[in-house]
Length: 56
Image 1 (cartoon, helix red, strand yellow):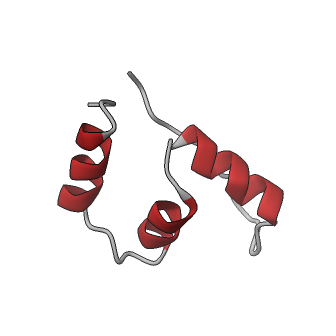
Image 2 (image 1 turned 120 degrees about the vertical axis):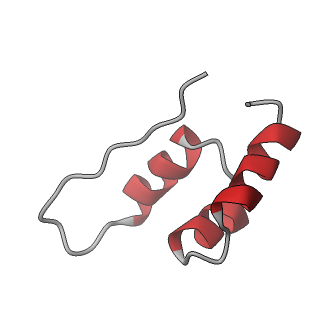
């Protein structure tokens, strides 16, 4: 299963609706998505999250 999202270049600020769409596309909870954006969730933790959800 592919997990991906798209962000336009050149935009300095993103609205809530775009961030919500990205969160859904990445199949993450609000807390998980915030962790990815703030870099408090590393690659290994993200892989664990996706593994627990049965995505990978």
